[in-house]
Image (tube, rainbow, N blue to C red):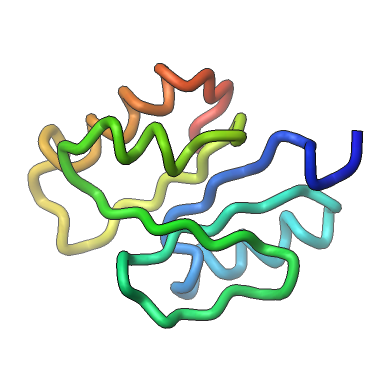
Length: 104
């Protein structure tokens, strides 16, 4: 299996201080990384990191699509999110639906 076919770690907050450090660490360990970026964002991720549009909220189908091919999730809650039941729980539900085996 090539690294392109290996299951990936999906990293939310991949362009922020904490998330970008997680991305760099995972890459240094040879892990395949998919980084979440806001829809319409021009944010750049390091070479070799696949960018996928992602927005917190109740759209479980969109979360499933973003998580496709990933088996682990680094879930960083943005400070602006106060209603975790409406904004974060759907991401966790989608992760469980798609076979994510580990959520950090």
